Length: 405
Ligand SMILES: [Zn+2]
Image 1 (cartoon, rainbow, N blue to C red):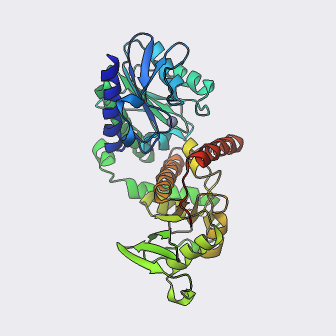
Image 2 (tube, rainbow, N blue to C red):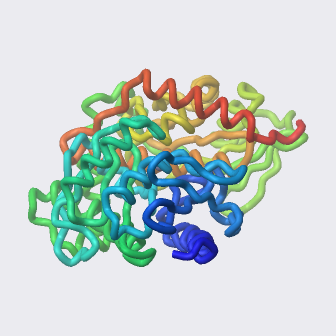
């Protein structure tokens, strides 16, 4: 494709993928082939909504060298492997999409797909794990590619890469992969008797969550009586120059620093204790998605099943039974904590980052639930998680703008 057209196509594809919920924030990347030797790819660490054609980076397939001052995506090597091995591929999308990511942590070598998902082969391979940006990851994706004629590969503990002759084919593959991953989990839950329509409509979701929580609860470290819902409503909040401001059930509540505990709700006391103990936290999002609520009822310590959880949330996420004081302490070493029976608190220096943490917590929770139904999710190695966390925090500390207190 002519270079300017390719750059414009990438801008449009990024917006389309965001709108479809297949990528978010700066995660994932998209590329388009220019000719036999080069492709153009989205830059590293940039929000898709802020990208212009000039931000895209041409990269050579043979040595990954690039032109200009903008750094290309760190997964350019995975794209290069696919362009080199599949001369007919002109468009590649790498996503961290939720359903494909959720099945990617179950230690499977492949998942089955139905024939009506036309961009996929009947078996979708799961590439073995490799740390992000490494040669091992490239090699593992290439070897999965050699085993399929379809247009999608699941990347273990990470996400997916989907490709095709053009943008539409790659986009359809990514969308079909979400459907296939969900159907696969449903079908395993029902021992091969699931109906595709029933799976696609989400009819089995509640039942599957209940069963998964029963399985996960075998490792519970929280007393059963402590796993009940305790909050009248779930709130988000921000630290204010004086005290804090909560958004509860759509209304804004200002809490002065000297308000007595007896005047506050349980949720308000919880938020106040988090701010008091953690000066770096300026925003709290209470994650209450059904998957998060379900995992919070299992009473487990959650380990990273996915790379982005290790990077952005931390190396573990505990379930705290006695919420206020202990949750505040747990948040000194992690960006999120599960509250027994009551979802999770996701905390950051600003609202955008707290919501990003919420999305990643939701995804790791789905991976735990589906993993339980698929024979048990396999956590990432602790040392790999620590390494990813350190690298992420180093990068993040250069980017973050913390408002003055
Ligand atoms: Zn990725």
